[in-house]
Image: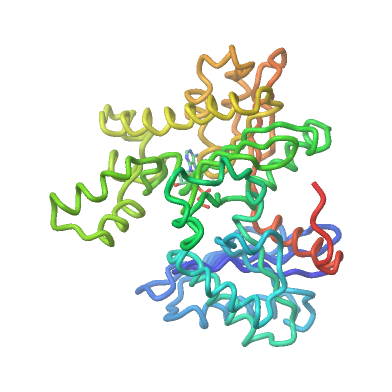
Length: 402
Ligand code: ADP
């Protein structure tokens, strides 16, 4: 089977082509800064070096044409694919597993736009373009919220008026589910145990960041909630905040709710405190003695550590703590700080293993501590493709097995 994965954002489209059952990646790339003065196309054919093209792309349709050209370059056409798989950020309460796109499901997806106005419209646009370009090809949606469908009601619900949930669907949904599920399965392989026998804490730390408590292979709590704004401090998002800040600010400043929301999404987090949302810059600034960068790093790590403690408490026993995402996979100092003095929770990082630079999945704990600490490279595109293949081979009738 050949599956083309499309991950369409507001100004970029990531794509990857996989061949199954080998799970070999034949092609992957991203078209970035669509609609800006200068757009870029990064791509890699099989294991060849990464290539970069400078382009002028006015709209996502032109970006899609680039992707189809790339297929031609590797001597494939759309008609040779088995399906296109689309990442959709918000599946609401309706979509619990991968779903075939048809007029009914597309309509249902459109109804979810108010729940994820920053993400779902771009995802849907990607799906609509794919249908236009390949009307006979199967299109499958895979959801970032689906892995958290298992959150029990006492964790999913907010303690707010019941009709806010019933009429407006305000509850915790959780995100990054594709990544948390993928790294959890990789951890199970590494620990040589079935996922359904494992308790895990997964930390996805990229531009967005979230923690997930996984009990017997199933997500039971996660730090992101109604939107991807809740929880950990992130690159440009504030994470957990006192909701009284909103009315207070609208009263005390000229800011509208929309302004505040934009600032909380795009100008908060590391960027607000240290002036950069890139953790590599933060470390450079700290080296130069920058106090704001040091504060930002301490705030960022403190919140992660607090969530580790909370999830340890609810899980009782933890087989592994997983670091993933651009920061989680690469930042040894951060991993060290987040796990500092957690020996009483059976967590202890081995400094040498932690500092070893590698792109391989690895264990970085002292072997005599019960909780493994793992660095696992996430691969959301491969997970989307794998879920799609599983869905198509089950003919969409059965729920997935953990
Ligand atoms: P996204 O969430 O957009 O997929 P990534 O998972 O690629 O992003 O993570 C991006 C972040 O990873 C960057 O903002 C950067 O802060 C961080 N990062 C990448 N490499 C390193 C590194 N070597 N050390 C620390 N942080 C890094």
